[in-house]
Image (cartoon, rainbow, N blue to C red):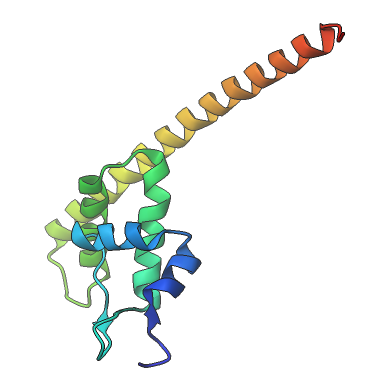
Length: 134
């Protein structure tokens, strides 16, 4: 095993994802181990870890597996060393802009939810402070 490869346990620790979740993402085609050891263990690279981090960041924003796959396919294509036709490059960039806009909206929605939750927590704390204890 090369020093640039990591086993799934190290990847799980670094990404804060469970082994089961990483395997699930492999089964759904979102990430593929870069190699296998002679014993058949999954081996990952920094690039694989970065890909898992993208997935981990998209999940709490409510993106579906298909949406994650779509974004990853677009970034993979843009990052490839292959010269892309202008029209294809623009279409991929437009898809990424769509994800950026959706992300901004979802973050704003989460901020609104958080503000409401904090208001509720403050209301409960005030209520408890006004309630005499026995």
